[in-house]
Image (cartoon, rainbow, N blue to C red):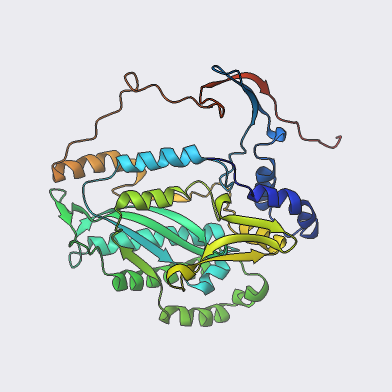
Length: 388
């Protein structure tokens, strides 16, 4: 796959320095670090290696990647490894695609409370699924779920929600049988939505009383307990969006969709159209429209494009992919082995690394397709530091 004509890195390199100067004091260290990493990605600043083709002698230089999880160019192999690992965990049952979305007022305060509210979104979504599934009136089983955080809409706006893929059934309370959901129906969305809303607001109030939330700008009055209580009233009554449907193309399609965003955020370089005096143009999908009119092109000023992109920088160390229930990391292998035994399906064959086919070369010659070897290592540039 060739290099796109326009990349996010090109926008940051062209407009980033002047914008950073104008925004001095308003960008977080994490946002500045992401900008710097994307600007330097695959340039001489990060070093690289000289390559020579064994077959035709073609030579070229390959610069190193920044490997930042927010970079649109990086970690494609990590995403592929994640996809293969999750596909190996699939059981021969129906799977369901679930989505839990925060209402706009909570999304607004989530931007300045990312670590607290994103974690709460994960925990309440997982708790809602496992609680309703364990209820004998619905499924009466312990289920598993893989949840992935998305914080963006197609137009790069701040829109926190979690996507999940969930097996259509689980292990009974006594651990002796597999309980399958009704074909084509997982759990009642209305019940999921009501429980998710109630539990999220309860835990939000706890964190407010514990002083874990911060409010700035137009939300500063919410620091007053009375104002916060009044602010919550309409949120207790409005509909909270929860989606749960069986994907028509199967669980592999959902995993493939999620894998495109597990190791990067916001927008891919393929969606960028142009950068000129009018700003940055990119393709986006308007979900309120129907048919072909859904796919549109939006043009934003370069400053606004960069601002929207950096809305989605995650707190340092925050895990965007989490597994719960039967798929929780601590007991996944044992739980999957039990599920396969109850479903009477064989365990997947382990990969024999010794007898495996020789892996393809890391670097391939663009002229003849032969393997390219590293003939020289170029060290990264040392940052310029002020004297002590």
